[in-house]
Length: 355
Image (tube, rainbow, N blue to C red; front, side):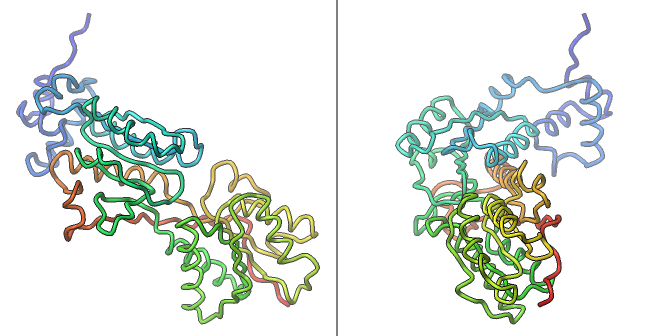
């Protein structure tokens, strides 16, 4: 039977000391080991199929190397589950594992979920939500390094750092794309008023119009909801029985499901997309935006990037290179990281039709 490689074997192959191997593979190489040596150590470890003993490492560091993640309903969401996927990518790359508990939108279960994870000696906690929203931070999250992803502490003095999408800039860049195509009459199906994201995207729409010196028509902004049927109904109100000179040349949507409804209504009315009307979505939802006919131009919500950024921030705190936890979060330190959305141009937007 082949002998399992040891840290000493890695050190010999890389031409470094055993302590250097330990520093690099335990995530403490920066500032202690030269970059070239770090690269040789990682290459040698890969060639020898070597990984540190997780149990021994935990005993030495007084850490479990486990991160607890609590979600409201992200585990059962095919879209927002990318947040947890991104967080787990980073955790695994740094020698941690994640344990996820979903409360299925029952806020009363938050505290017990946190306590269950704390009983398992997790090194840190992350709270993740479907859709941007404020939460009441469970008190147990203040006992270990913790972070919020896609949600925020609405307290006057936030207790925890949060990582969220830059919704206002996303709304602005979506509207800018349409304005740059020559559209000057852009309707907005803006979601619902009870969503914190909706008014931010509306503000971005307004900011883009102001920067282009194009007046905003208030009758073109509808708080329509989020679903396909809401997009269909909203579009029929905008376009059905309206002369080409009086209808908007583009419809911007607060999510991709609304955009599906817009496309269905346009087809019902015999309008071509994007020749007669351009459609702009938001989210870049898998198996919707890229499979529509025509495929949907949209703003990609950076869910995986949010998960990666939040986990990186959390692990930096646990390993001593950052500070985000507890009461210190609101005392002159940054409590917010905003991750940019990304414009994805496909086939549903085109130049404004001539009238």
